[in-house]
Image 1 (cartoon, helix red, strand yellow):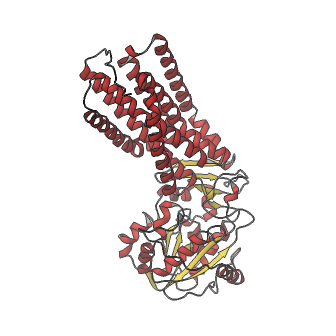
Image 2 (cartoon, rainbow, N blue to C red; image 1 turned 180 degrees about the vertical axis):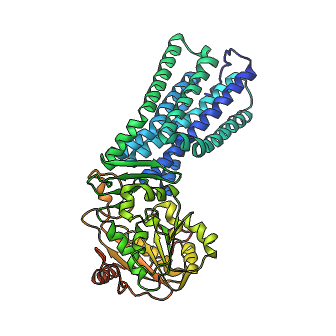
Image 3 (spheres, rainbow, N blue to C red; image 1 turned 135 degrees about the horizontal axis):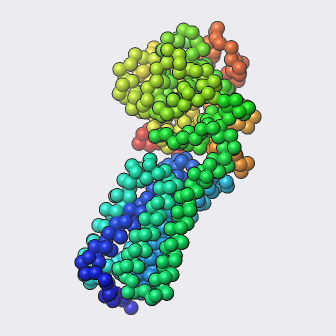
Length: 532
């Protein structure tokens, strides 16, 4: 049996009614894409590996859209009422999705099931829109199916374009993820409800009209309450993840920066970047001593630090009086400002940025080495203090092309020190970094050191719950590289170190070599090998 829509009784001429429907399609498409991008962005921030999270969201959502289209066939007989209900549900679920996903991560540490669930539900609801809108637009004025589909999808795709541009350039920077999602849900509810309650009110009984008004009013009230509670919700979520001693929580143009403890609080300072612990005042000296000092055994007048905006690697470099210049290339200028001004972080880095030998460049390390850095004099020591290679934005900074640029800037006899993740939990990724460094014409010596107790290394999850802390790392792993095989030793004489010694460094090298795997292929820009 073929369903044939009956002409609707409209309060306006058919041409204006058709324009109103296509405008609603435009608005709803924009909202739908915002929900999609919001899930991808929040999942990448909370879980990491943006390629995997984007693939999960997009694939589940596209599948669910097909499922929603099939389910909507049953609603075509009451298309106006069905569309209004779908939009109210979509506004509620999509608007609250960011807050719910953040809550699942903060309090339960299980964001992936919530991510899949919201992608599925939102996809079903978005998929249900198209058949219902197709029925409504045909009820205004019958036309061939091809023409109706072309008009509908033209409005849909233009709306998606607007939503896709509004998310990164307007909603995210101005309102943030939580408020942006809630506002999008409100726009979605108003657009869907207004279309049906005004243009297609003749299709509704009096009881249905009042029920829709009540439902949409309730949805808008819930979204409004969520908007009012956004600030206390974020504070509560931060306390669940970071504890009650959060001193600084700022969203820079690059990442979220959170500082806890330090500054006379009686607790060790901790620095979190995008929810991942980068510095623990309890044992950061073990990490930074191991990263910096093996590379300083030799010529060291000119030093380049890639990343390390917290100033702690610079602190260790400046312990050598014969260092004449230190260039720090850091993407996040706000992090550097915090390292210069926050009393807890300044005390930890010993006011490293006040030293006249230090110069800070705000730039992406890869881009800087290709452009301005290519004209700089070669460096005796290069320290790569960058996030874990498994974090997708960092993958290019562990590629063959990147290390090729690094090799060109090394002075004769120069050394490169690389934080390369952890051998304890991701040995394949570590040995891929090793293979990639070697593919750029450098010889590398691996070594690994342990953190104090169970504190783990940088880039672990911020959450403190026991079930989340299973992700913590049991070692920091490094590579010391040069054009000729570098000796793994410390400078003699050198500064007194709290942790690292000749004996400890020798032991660290042997520990890494014992876990050596068959050499994997190198990682390149076109074939990244760290996300699997």
